[in-house]
Image (cartoon, rainbow, N blue to C red; front, side, top):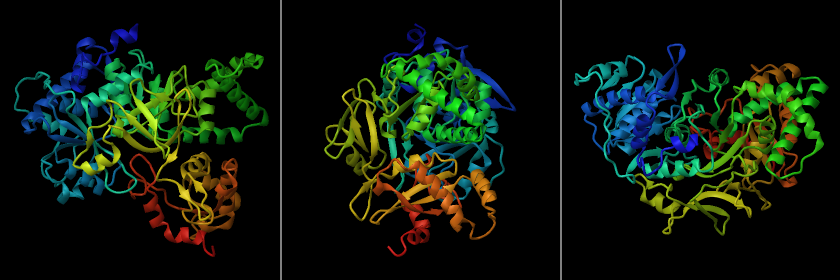
Length: 602
């Protein structure tokens, strides 16, 4: 009943700005956002947020912005992101989000390609990135910074000074709501491609809101929930499911201060909902297993039994297995073991949504066994983004769930997933050739992902069409599956499997620095030694761990040799995308000599 009364229907608010305004009208004094400011958590209501949006709108108009103009947001997750975005949407502007950890050359490309006229920047460091590309900023006429910074860039103002210079004498100007066609362009989201230039995905108001309505039909989200937002709002999954969807459902959102503070913020906020990517769960999993490995044999057995019976209880609830008397022990083990894990995550999580990549089944089994339901989903920026998701009452962790209501899927002759729905993008900005390449004449979007679909429509991702390693003997290996298994090891921070056209597989490994220190101490190795990363004893330990992680793979898929990479792959050095996908060709280029040594003599 609570859900039905509070959820905003699509016909009541057909644009994103109208959805926000309708939310304010329905519950102006309800909690909307919780943000960390001036050393403390502060609460803001829907009405307070709209009042601030109106101030921003007034100044945007004074800056000469007109409907259809593009504005960019280069900012971490906070309420200012929302205020800026809603101010733009209410005026009929088009928002272009930019990843805070993207490279300067990519930012320049996005600003120029989209013809951005106005930009909000969070910090001095981000402003410095713009100063480094000042000659490539194109049409950019105004930069508003959340921090007061000194710079010689033109047309830069702090948000405090920018708002203070308003010509309007009204202390609280009226909120403006331009009448916009629901099918009009709302945002351009540049995909962080692993090869080539980013492509600007054009999403309409209807694309996004239709996707939200479809998701809410199968995933219960209520005004009484509290969502912790920590994935970048420039990521379409977080923006749609962690920002726009809560407006439609009336759910308050707390903004995490950042990944380093995530553990603290979970305890402070105690959220009931969270959206994540597999790497977050994998890191927590690694820490848990590392801690458990140092416990007494009794505690290790209790932990394993708690996970086993928690998982069994979950499978019984899903009606996949029969009840067993052993489940009489589950409440006791839950109190002794699982409860402590849940408390580390705030103690109130109803469920978490996980997307962006495949989640290892061992990781899913541990968290679900601990009483933390993980609902895996799947989608693309080009589909606004959700295509499929598991449900609480139909959760098959080996899959990414079934298609959302109203979304069509089918499998091509090459095993590729095709999809068609009202949430499929308008196209790529300034790139009709790329649009024609991904969407056919019948409206089917070609995802590039290879899948299997069972009789109940559960979708399992089996690999990427273009990310298959073909060994010299003709055997085909999807590297992603092996990488997902290896990166769960406490010694491994990042890994890339290689072997295209070679007689066997090898791996480039970035070790976990903390675990590496422990291994070095045990082996009496000096990390400062220039040959430390080539030491045979270090490589032997890493290889042993990798073999344990990949023992279930076929014999031809065995990793034969490894090269240890001293420096991590980051967006700053251009070796991963802002969403942490490997840029394989660039990594191979940088590590060419190391890769060649792995196959010397073969």
